[in-house]
Image (cartoon, rainbow, N blue to C red):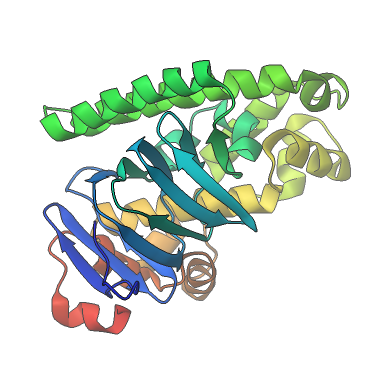
Length: 309
């Protein structure tokens, strides 16, 4: 992965397996067909100005230092350490000479529908810097290197295999996160994980309908106010934010995987109108649904792409 020598990223950089597209500070990462993970090795100096993307980013230096500026903090990630950048988090990256690293980017959508993932959503929304726990860093590194090997071998079902290692990584980190905060997350708040996971399953199965906070609260057997507060304590996000993310994830997948008209995508993903869908999509993705489809569909038309650069 390269940038211009003056440190400014080109609007569109071509790589052997796709494109890196920038629109202002928003980066759109394209993937190989039938995949949603990219892995870039690098052994050259580079600088990437502050940008954000929907993908989760993991940096795994093998030698040297990769320096991140993110959320008013500086992370000097060295060999043996790992930094996980959450989806949508603005960050800046500088790599110096003699740095060798792997950069993994992947869409979180395939992970979020698992029933127990909401219990660690608060963890996933913050940077995870593995630097003071060598044992955990080694376990995570081993899993990620298996994903790297799988990615470059490109055997049948390689995308699913790569995600299986990412799932193992989050299971490992999630267990440590939950075990480290049981009083705050469960006992002190009197949150029953089974009830909250059932509520989340209900949302995942009815997102296409006109469901409300009160509907899900009644399903869970709580008052509206109590459920709203408890849901955020359990998942790390509000009910409305979770429902909106779910609908946007479904819409994003439909835009890329199908040729359905925009109004059909809006309807099937649970938005009340095409106008609402367009507004919410732009607010969260910094582009229209049509632009998103053009960016992520394979064989992007350069003429149509000009407006994005």
